[in-house]
Length: 199
Image (cartoon, rainbow, N blue to C red):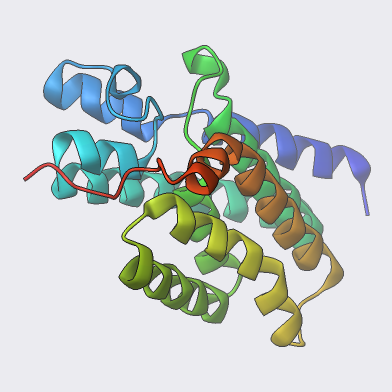
């Protein structure tokens, strides 16, 4: 294993993750910075909340594409270790994008994209967890936190998860939960808003 290739995969993943689809799309389509509206996050949920579900889906697809490119590049450079390094770095870039003043999203859509690309079974189970939580709570942050907690646990239940993939799952879970710390405080105080997309 060549460490420099893993490092290169991580750098490439971070730079690709720093391409904030939410910011670029909203500036081009609506002439607005999505970080100035709603929750202030540059993610698909806030885009959907502010500009509508079509814009939110467009953002998710863009995040999926950049994640796919990052993981494919990482795999090409250094196999599974490179893929996992690129996945973690892409997530960090999405949350703290170097091109946009280190103000990005909370990593949920990129985490979902990474799950889909690492193991489609993981993605499908996480989607189920997300929507079950949404059915009972109608609160996206609760859904996101629930899916984050389930992320590494599902990987363990799948049995054939490798150590690099499991480490990636734990990293994703901890980062997403950390970025939702203010949401957790509001949930505990009963002040977290329900999700309403712009029609």
